Image 1 (tube, rainbow, N blue to C red):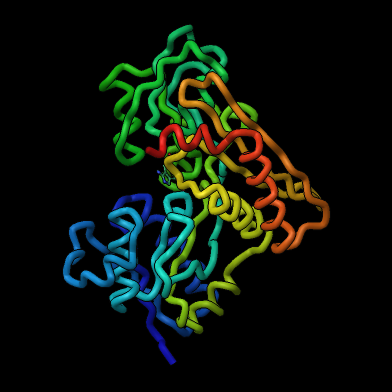
Image 2: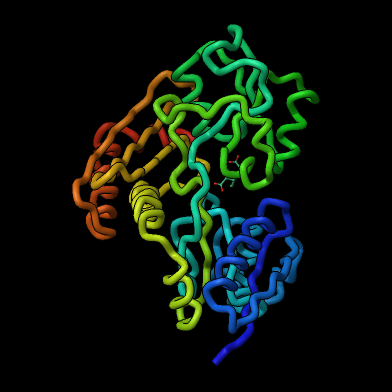
Length: 309
Ligand SMILES: NCc1[nH]cc(CCC(=O)O)c1CC(=O)O
């Protein structure tokens, strides 16, 4: 029986914070085990095992963490679920969804709320999902593409003279930067990305001990809506770079799932919602798949394909 587990993490502040949260949760649940955090560098030894890197087809950093998992350097990989592709390498799986912070997008670093910004105000975001929905709401806005980690993006406000930036509430809350939040943007204006704010822990499929632990750490009230969003995205065959949004929330006995897709210039926006009574994981996921089918029937595929290339 394994007594010590290594948690692999990216080395960004946000990634470390999320990994510490997972470490704390698991440590509380299983005080008899040791959970150590290990930073995995982006450079890594990516090219050392060609077969493994071919298996892990995802983004560069995710791939390094997955290679570390597959080669036994780490036992768990902590990710912002939003950034993960919907299809994982054959030997890996999501062992559990640990916590979801506020799933909404925010306007940050602005002196005015979104509705009060002057015509032509410059807002920073690198996300096509945010850009397209914001333009559908206010075609006059100037959307300036920005990249980098959260603090880098906040710094862009002064550097390139922006009225504010659009970010995930989750990142700012986890980094204790909530004082930068001007406004939580209504999901009726900017629907969040599928899985936004949720932390996913990836493990090897044969890690029985860890699987049990992570199941015990999971709260199904949190996990069910997130799995529904994941299944929606998978059915749409899209990732976090598409101008596509999906947000599921529990309201009493109901699961409410909303999806949106928009043309990049905001000239067209498709929005659909489904409400499920007395949800279970299975019915939630099935409803999400139906929602994806309705979105496609309404023409969402063309909007997504416009930027897929
Ligand atoms: N792709 C960037 C990214 N990936 C995860 C987060 C933090 C929020 C989350 O955990 O979903 C962010 C920043 C942002 O979207 O503003």
